[in-house]
Structures are given as structure tokens and as C-alpha cells.
Amino acid sequence: MSVQVENTSSKKKILVFLLLFLICLFLFQEAYAKYRKFATVNVNNTVANWNIKINNEDIRNKTTLTNNITPTINSNANVNANVLAPGSSGYFDVTIDATNADVSFTYEITIDSLNASTIEDLDINSYAVNDFTNVQTISNGVVSGTITHNTPSTVVRVFFSWIDDGTDTMTNQDDTAAATSGTANADILVSFHLTQVSS
Image (cartoon, rainbow, N blue to C red; front, side, top):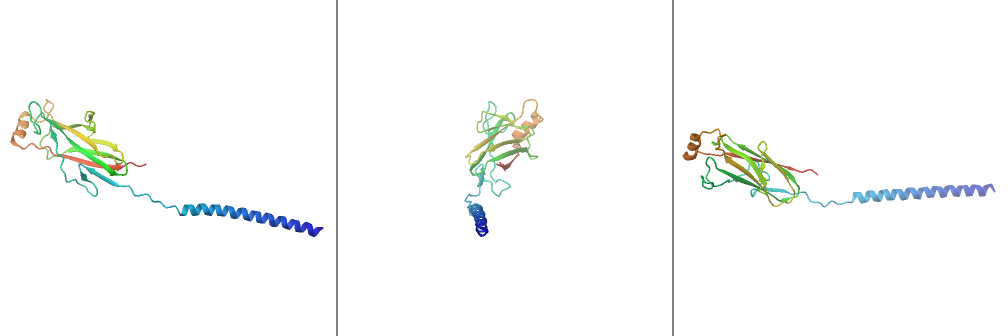
């Protein structure tokens, strides 16, 4: 009788051991299968393209753009079109083409009048983006905004004027001399800073 009890007890122990072994094996296979699935994942994504043009010029690997920005000077009752004179006003456009940019980015356009500029009363005061009727004031010489990836064209129009309303610093004689002698020069530096928008 005792031999039979020992055999039953041994069989139970073996069955429990086998059951535990099978459970462990199953858990190990599940964990290994998950690891194998993770280990064999292929990432086929492409690297984002950063191809941006400013006024049709590719900016990649450049610190200075070679194309000059040509302003448009408005005509008025006293001044012909595209003639810079006291009281005249105009604008220049900066076109940012992000058709081939796969990431969104912010832009900062800094506008400085250089020492070479002979027109002290040149006021660069406002801008508009795409909708030229929605004119905004330039703050501290900087125009900024965000452009969504693959946007074909964003036009930033910057407005300026040659002040001649009593608040100017140049005298009428200075204005006349600059305008008639052909020495009037509005030398403006336009700088760009583009930063990828982090996700």
C-alpha cells in the first residue's frame, strides 16, 4: 500500500513539474517571439527633405544669397513710378518656396538699414503676408511667422517710405541734393533665419 502511495505522489510531482516546465516554456516562447518580432522590424521611412528657396534661390549650404531684391516704388501725384524721392513709398517682396520641404519651419526676416544708405529718413515700417490688404507693423525690424511643410509660396511684402512730413531728420536741401545729384542710396540688409518646428 505504501509503494502505491509513493508512486502516486511521485507521479503528481512529475506532473506538476512537467506542467510548470510547459508553462515556463510557453512564456519563454511568447517573450522570445515578441523579441524576434521587435528585432526584425524594418524602418523604411525616408529622411526629411529641407529644400527651401527664397526668391527662387536655393538656400542650402549658403550664407549669402546672390540675387538682389528689387523694390517697387509707387507713383503719386508728385513722383513717377519706380523713382525714389522724398515722399515716395514702395515695397519689396520676399517669396519663400517650401514646396520641397518635408518639415514645417519658422522664419525670421531681419531688416536693417546699413551705414551706406544715404537716406536717413527711409522708414521700413510695415509688412503683409500673402494677403497684402492685411498690413501689420514691423516690430524691432523683425518679421516672423511659421510655414507649413510643402507650402508652394509664401510672399512677405515689406513696405517702406521716404519720410517727408515734418518728422524727418533730413532737411529739404538734403532731400533735394540727394534726389537731384543721383547720390540717393537706400542700402538695406535683409537677413533670414529659418528654424525647423519640433514635433
